[in-house]
View 1 (tube, rainbow, N blue to C red):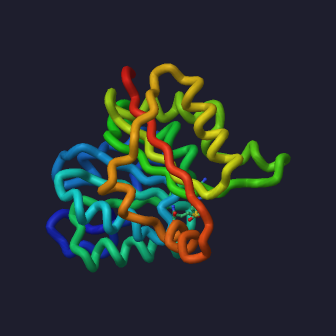
View 2 (view 1 turned 60 degrees about the vertical axis):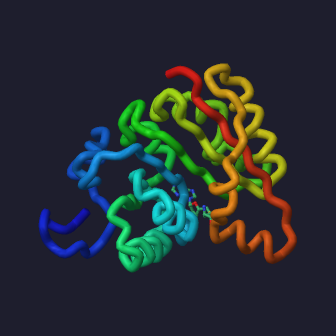
View 3 (view 1 turned 90 degrees about the vertical axis):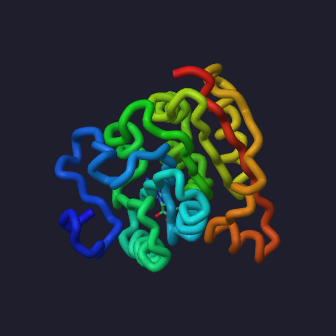
Length: 204
Ligand SMILES: C[S@@+](CC[C@H](N)C(=O)[O-])C[C@H]1O[C@@H](n2cnc3c(N)ncnc32)[C@H](O)[C@@H]1O
């Protein structure tokens, strides 16, 4: 965060001293707790609500658009969420190079950009490499939670996780399913069906 220790918190957005070394989580969070990460948190309704419901956990929201991150920053500050921090960064880089290894208890990726045109599919965040990157940062027993409205992307998500024997499919707990994201609320209002999946890392 930008504030000095002991000063009034002015933003939950964290800027690391180095963009090439893995984060030192003790610099982000005043209290050490199990960590949950959301990639592409958007306007942040999900993260703000979920972090408020789970004060025994720390939360790190990652988003590349500053305007959306600032909305989540304001929500988090209004709610006095001492367990929430945010970073403006590209999610794939963050996942591969900045997140500490074996540090994440739950990772959330909800309604990532679907890149529906065939020639653009290489831009999808969840690709053949994604389970390997997730396996590196999750703690054993940690869970990757996914939601999407795009059926082709959903099939790809299930395929890449099914191909990695370290992951087993698990149910999304009801209390988590009930906390909807901004995009999910929009889909639901328009009657668009959405899909969810979750995968537990059985061994590192
Ligand atoms: C379709 S929106 C979904 C937002 C939110 N998860 C929700 O469900 O309401 C996708 C979000 O991911 C962000 N995003 C897309 N690609 C990203 C990337 N490579 N790194 C970080 N954020 C990304 C976008 O800026 C956008 O806010």
